[in-house]
Image (cartoon, rainbow, N blue to C red; front, side, top):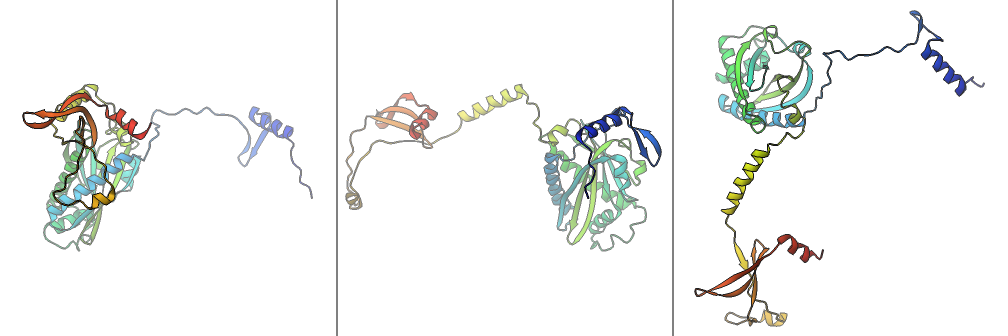
Length: 333
Protein backbone atom coordinates (compact mmCIF):
# COMPACT_ATOMS: atom_id res chain seq x y z
CA UNK A 1 0.00 0.00 0.00
CA UNK A 2 1.45 3.36 -1.03
CA UNK A 3 1.05 6.26 1.43
CA UNK A 4 0.03 9.64 0.16
CA UNK A 5 2.87 12.15 0.56
CA UNK A 6 2.61 15.91 0.10
CA UNK A 7 4.67 17.40 -2.65
CA UNK A 8 7.20 20.16 -1.96
CA UNK A 9 4.85 22.74 -3.48
CA UNK A 10 2.00 21.58 -1.24
CA UNK A 11 4.26 21.73 1.85
CA UNK A 12 5.36 25.29 1.06
CA UNK A 13 1.77 26.37 0.49
CA UNK A 14 0.67 24.79 3.77
CA UNK A 15 3.42 26.53 5.75
CA UNK A 16 2.65 29.89 4.14
CA UNK A 17 -1.04 29.47 4.87
CA UNK A 18 -0.45 28.61 8.54
CA UNK A 19 1.94 31.54 8.98
CA UNK A 20 -0.43 34.04 7.34
CA UNK A 21 -3.50 32.74 9.17
CA UNK A 22 -5.36 31.72 6.03
CA UNK A 23 -5.37 28.10 7.19
CA UNK A 24 -7.13 27.27 10.47
CA UNK A 25 -5.29 25.26 13.13
CA UNK A 26 -7.52 22.86 15.05
CA UNK A 27 -6.84 21.96 18.68
CA UNK A 28 -8.67 20.51 21.64
CA UNK A 29 -9.24 24.06 22.87
CA UNK A 30 -11.13 24.99 19.74
CA UNK A 31 -10.30 26.80 16.52
CA UNK A 32 -7.20 28.98 16.52
CA UNK A 33 -4.90 30.66 14.03
CA UNK A 34 -1.15 30.56 13.84
CA UNK A 35 0.62 33.78 14.70
CA UNK A 36 3.96 35.11 15.86
CA UNK A 37 4.00 36.72 19.29
CA UNK A 38 6.77 39.26 20.01
CA UNK A 39 8.89 38.30 23.02
CA UNK A 40 10.44 40.95 25.22
CA UNK A 41 13.06 40.15 27.82
CA UNK A 42 11.78 41.56 31.14
CA UNK A 43 14.10 43.75 33.22
CA UNK A 44 14.61 41.07 35.92
CA UNK A 45 15.63 38.37 33.45
CA UNK A 46 19.26 37.37 33.44
CA UNK A 47 21.59 34.75 32.06
CA UNK A 48 24.05 33.29 34.52
CA UNK A 49 26.99 30.94 34.14
CA UNK A 50 27.60 28.34 36.81
CA UNK A 51 31.10 27.23 35.89
CA UNK A 52 33.43 29.77 37.52
CA UNK A 53 36.49 27.47 37.29
CA UNK A 54 38.78 29.84 39.18
CA UNK A 55 36.30 30.17 42.05
CA UNK A 56 36.18 26.37 42.29
CA UNK A 57 39.95 26.29 42.68
CA UNK A 58 39.75 28.98 45.36
CA UNK A 59 37.05 27.02 47.17
CA UNK A 60 39.36 24.00 47.27
CA UNK A 61 42.05 26.17 48.88
CA UNK A 62 39.52 27.66 51.32
CA UNK A 63 38.37 24.15 52.30
CA UNK A 64 41.94 22.99 52.92
CA UNK A 65 42.66 26.04 55.08
CA UNK A 66 39.43 25.56 57.09
CA UNK A 67 40.29 21.90 57.67
CA UNK A 68 43.68 22.78 59.18
CA UNK A 69 42.32 25.55 61.40
CA UNK A 70 39.30 23.55 62.63
CA UNK A 71 41.60 20.62 63.40
CA UNK A 72 43.60 22.92 65.70
CA UNK A 73 40.37 24.19 67.27
CA UNK A 74 38.90 20.75 67.95
CA UNK A 75 42.16 18.85 68.44
CA UNK A 76 40.71 16.14 66.22
CA UNK A 77 41.69 14.99 62.70
CA UNK A 78 39.55 17.14 60.41
CA UNK A 79 39.09 17.30 56.66
CA UNK A 80 37.00 19.83 54.72
CA UNK A 81 36.25 19.49 51.01
CA UNK A 82 34.52 21.76 48.52
CA UNK A 83 31.64 20.06 46.72
CA UNK A 84 29.09 21.40 44.25
CA UNK A 85 28.87 25.00 43.11
CA UNK A 86 25.76 26.32 41.39
CA UNK A 87 24.08 29.60 40.58
CA UNK A 88 20.45 29.82 41.61
CA UNK A 89 17.97 32.31 42.97
CA UNK A 90 18.15 33.14 46.66
CA UNK A 91 14.55 31.97 47.12
CA UNK A 92 15.27 28.56 45.65
CA UNK A 93 18.37 28.21 47.81
CA UNK A 94 16.29 29.04 50.93
CA UNK A 95 13.73 26.33 50.05
CA UNK A 96 16.40 23.61 50.05
CA UNK A 97 17.74 24.50 53.50
CA UNK A 98 16.62 22.70 56.67
CA UNK A 99 15.38 24.50 59.73
CA UNK A 100 16.32 25.61 62.22
CA UNK A 101 19.78 26.55 60.98
CA UNK A 102 22.63 28.76 62.10
CA UNK A 103 22.91 31.47 59.46
CA UNK A 104 25.99 33.66 59.91
CA UNK A 105 25.53 36.87 57.91
CA UNK A 106 28.72 38.71 56.93
CA UNK A 107 30.02 41.61 54.90
CA UNK A 108 33.32 41.78 53.02
CA UNK A 109 34.36 45.37 52.33
CA UNK A 110 35.06 46.78 49.80
CA UNK A 111 32.51 44.41 48.23
CA UNK A 112 28.96 45.66 48.65
CA UNK A 113 26.14 43.51 49.94
CA UNK A 114 26.09 40.57 52.32
CA UNK A 115 26.72 36.84 52.18
CA UNK A 116 25.72 34.05 54.54
CA UNK A 117 27.28 30.88 55.94
CA UNK A 118 24.64 28.22 56.62
CA UNK A 119 25.28 25.51 59.24
CA UNK A 120 22.65 22.74 59.53
CA UNK A 121 21.72 21.52 63.05
CA UNK A 122 23.69 18.26 62.75
CA UNK A 123 26.87 20.11 61.79
CA UNK A 124 26.48 22.62 64.63
CA UNK A 125 26.13 19.89 67.23
CA UNK A 126 28.95 17.87 65.72
CA UNK A 127 31.24 20.90 66.16
CA UNK A 128 29.94 21.64 69.65
CA UNK A 129 30.18 18.05 70.91
CA UNK A 130 33.76 17.60 69.68
CA UNK A 131 34.74 21.09 70.83
CA UNK A 132 33.79 20.20 74.40
CA UNK A 133 35.53 16.84 74.29
CA UNK A 134 32.70 14.55 73.21
CA UNK A 135 32.85 11.92 70.50
CA UNK A 136 30.19 13.57 68.31
CA UNK A 137 27.81 10.60 68.46
CA UNK A 138 25.04 12.73 69.97
CA UNK A 139 25.18 15.30 67.17
CA UNK A 140 21.77 14.22 65.83
CA UNK A 141 20.11 13.80 69.22
CA UNK A 142 18.63 17.30 69.44
CA UNK A 143 18.47 18.19 65.76
CA UNK A 144 14.95 19.56 66.06
CA UNK A 145 15.42 21.96 68.94
CA UNK A 146 16.66 25.53 69.02
CA UNK A 147 20.34 26.25 69.49
CA UNK A 148 21.77 27.12 72.87
CA UNK A 149 24.05 30.07 73.55
CA UNK A 150 27.04 27.73 73.61
CA UNK A 151 26.14 26.25 70.25
CA UNK A 152 25.81 29.71 68.74
CA UNK A 153 29.20 30.69 70.19
CA UNK A 154 30.91 27.67 68.62
CA UNK A 155 29.15 28.41 65.32
CA UNK A 156 30.57 31.93 65.44
CA UNK A 157 34.06 30.54 66.08
CA UNK A 158 33.70 28.34 63.02
CA UNK A 159 32.45 31.25 60.91
CA UNK A 160 35.46 33.34 61.97
CA UNK A 161 37.76 30.55 60.75
CA UNK A 162 35.98 30.44 57.42
CA UNK A 163 35.96 34.21 56.90
CA UNK A 164 39.67 34.36 57.63
CA UNK A 165 40.27 31.56 55.13
CA UNK A 166 38.30 33.42 52.45
CA UNK A 167 40.16 36.66 53.21
CA UNK A 168 43.61 35.07 52.90
CA UNK A 169 42.77 32.90 49.88
CA UNK A 170 41.19 35.76 47.91
CA UNK A 171 44.00 38.20 48.79
CA UNK A 172 45.82 37.81 45.43
CA UNK A 173 42.60 38.90 43.68
CA UNK A 174 41.27 41.54 46.05
CA UNK A 175 42.02 42.58 49.61
CA UNK A 176 38.74 42.13 51.48
CA UNK A 177 37.86 42.46 55.14
CA UNK A 178 35.14 39.89 55.96
CA UNK A 179 33.20 40.75 59.10
CA UNK A 180 30.46 38.79 60.85
CA UNK A 181 27.32 40.94 61.18
CA UNK A 182 24.76 38.67 62.83
CA UNK A 183 23.87 35.05 63.57
CA UNK A 184 20.26 34.19 62.80
CA UNK A 185 18.36 30.98 63.54
CA UNK A 186 15.85 31.29 60.70
CA UNK A 187 16.30 32.11 57.03
CA UNK A 188 13.27 34.41 57.28
CA UNK A 189 15.44 36.78 59.31
CA UNK A 190 18.28 36.81 56.78
CA UNK A 191 18.28 39.64 54.26
CA UNK A 192 20.94 39.33 51.56
CA UNK A 193 18.70 40.13 48.58
CA UNK A 194 15.31 39.44 47.01
CA UNK A 195 14.07 35.92 46.30
CA UNK A 196 14.71 36.31 42.56
CA UNK A 197 18.29 37.63 42.90
CA UNK A 198 20.90 35.13 41.67
CA UNK A 199 23.53 33.85 44.09
CA UNK A 200 26.46 31.45 44.03
CA UNK A 201 25.64 28.52 46.30
CA UNK A 202 28.64 26.42 47.34
CA UNK A 203 28.42 23.24 49.39
CA UNK A 204 31.20 21.98 51.67
CA UNK A 205 31.64 18.70 53.53
CA UNK A 206 33.41 18.41 56.88
CA UNK A 207 34.78 15.21 58.39
CA UNK A 208 35.85 15.08 62.03
CA UNK A 209 37.50 11.69 62.46
CA UNK A 210 34.77 9.32 61.23
CA UNK A 211 31.88 11.80 61.63
CA UNK A 212 30.56 13.87 58.75
CA UNK A 213 28.67 17.13 58.38
CA UNK A 214 28.05 19.79 55.76
CA UNK A 215 27.62 23.53 55.40
CA UNK A 216 27.00 26.07 52.65
CA UNK A 217 28.09 29.54 51.64
CA UNK A 218 25.66 31.74 49.72
CA UNK A 219 27.07 34.79 47.93
CA UNK A 220 24.81 37.05 45.82
CA UNK A 221 26.29 37.59 42.37
CA UNK A 222 25.64 41.32 42.76
CA UNK A 223 27.99 41.29 45.75
CA UNK A 224 30.70 39.53 43.69
CA UNK A 225 30.22 41.60 40.53
CA UNK A 226 33.81 42.98 40.47
CA UNK A 227 35.24 39.46 40.80
CA UNK A 228 32.96 37.49 38.48
CA UNK A 229 35.14 37.96 35.36
CA UNK A 230 38.14 36.69 37.33
CA UNK A 231 36.17 33.77 38.80
CA UNK A 232 35.15 32.90 35.25
CA UNK A 233 38.81 32.72 34.21
CA UNK A 234 39.13 36.07 32.46
CA UNK A 235 42.25 38.14 32.93
CA UNK A 236 41.85 41.39 34.80
CA UNK A 237 43.10 44.74 33.52
CA UNK A 238 46.74 45.37 34.33
CA UNK A 239 47.95 48.57 35.93
CA UNK A 240 50.67 49.97 33.67
CA UNK A 241 52.14 52.11 36.45
CA UNK A 242 52.27 49.14 38.81
CA UNK A 243 53.94 47.00 36.13
CA UNK A 244 56.57 49.71 35.54
CA UNK A 245 57.31 49.92 39.24
CA UNK A 246 57.78 46.16 39.49
CA UNK A 247 60.03 46.21 36.42
CA UNK A 248 62.32 48.72 38.13
CA UNK A 249 62.39 46.65 41.32
CA UNK A 250 63.26 43.50 39.40
CA UNK A 251 66.04 45.27 37.48
CA UNK A 252 67.60 46.49 40.73
CA UNK A 253 67.46 43.03 42.27
CA UNK A 254 68.87 41.36 39.16
CA UNK A 255 71.88 43.65 39.38
CA UNK A 256 72.60 42.25 42.85
CA UNK A 257 72.35 38.62 41.75
CA UNK A 258 75.52 36.52 42.03
CA UNK A 259 76.53 34.32 39.09
CA UNK A 260 79.48 31.97 38.56
CA UNK A 261 81.71 32.79 35.59
CA UNK A 262 83.78 30.19 33.70
CA UNK A 263 86.15 30.35 30.75
CA UNK A 264 88.00 27.80 28.63
CA UNK A 265 91.75 28.53 28.47
CA UNK A 266 92.75 25.95 25.88
CA UNK A 267 92.09 22.79 23.92
CA UNK A 268 94.10 19.65 23.22
CA UNK A 269 93.59 16.55 21.06
CA UNK A 270 94.81 13.14 22.23
CA UNK A 271 94.30 9.61 20.94
CA UNK A 272 92.10 7.59 23.27
CA UNK A 273 94.98 5.16 23.87
CA UNK A 274 97.22 7.99 25.13
CA UNK A 275 94.41 9.36 27.26
CA UNK A 276 93.89 6.16 29.22
CA UNK A 277 97.66 5.90 29.83
CA UNK A 278 97.78 9.26 31.64
CA UNK A 279 99.03 9.10 35.24
CA UNK A 280 99.27 11.68 38.03
CA UNK A 281 102.00 14.18 37.16
CA UNK A 282 101.71 13.81 33.35
CA UNK A 283 101.44 17.09 31.43
CA UNK A 284 99.04 17.75 28.58
CA UNK A 285 100.51 20.34 26.23
CA UNK A 286 98.17 23.02 24.89
CA UNK A 287 98.81 25.88 22.55
CA UNK A 288 99.26 29.31 24.09
CA UNK A 289 95.68 30.67 24.15
CA UNK A 290 95.06 34.12 22.76
CA UNK A 291 91.30 34.56 23.12
CA UNK A 292 88.73 33.37 25.63
CA UNK A 293 84.97 33.30 26.02
CA UNK A 294 83.50 34.00 29.45
CA UNK A 295 80.32 32.02 30.23
CA UNK A 296 77.67 32.19 32.96
CA UNK A 297 75.72 28.96 33.47
CA UNK A 298 76.98 27.74 30.07
CA UNK A 299 75.69 30.91 28.38
CA UNK A 300 78.35 32.74 26.32
CA UNK A 301 78.50 36.36 27.47
CA UNK A 302 81.90 37.95 26.81
CA UNK A 303 84.55 37.62 24.09
CA UNK A 304 87.97 38.62 25.45
CA UNK A 305 91.76 38.25 25.37
CA UNK A 306 93.71 36.18 27.87
CA UNK A 307 96.39 37.95 29.85
CA UNK A 308 97.81 38.66 33.28
CA UNK A 309 96.54 41.36 35.64
CA UNK A 310 98.28 42.03 38.97
CA UNK A 311 99.96 38.66 38.83
CA UNK A 312 96.80 36.70 38.13
CA UNK A 313 95.42 35.23 34.94
CA UNK A 314 92.65 37.45 33.59
CA UNK A 315 90.39 38.05 30.61
CA UNK A 316 90.26 41.47 29.00
CA UNK A 317 86.76 42.21 27.70
CA UNK A 318 86.61 42.85 23.97
CA UNK A 319 82.88 42.64 23.29
CA UNK A 320 79.61 41.45 24.75
CA UNK A 321 78.04 38.52 22.95
CA UNK A 322 74.36 38.20 22.09
CA UNK A 323 73.19 34.90 23.68
CA UNK A 324 70.29 34.63 21.25
CA UNK A 325 72.48 35.04 18.18
CA UNK A 326 74.98 32.60 19.68
CA UNK A 327 72.22 30.00 20.18
CA UNK A 328 71.10 30.41 16.58
CA UNK A 329 74.66 29.89 15.34
CA UNK A 330 75.06 26.74 17.45
CA UNK A 331 71.82 25.25 16.14
CA UNK A 332 72.70 26.04 12.52
CA UNK A 333 69.64 28.31 11.97
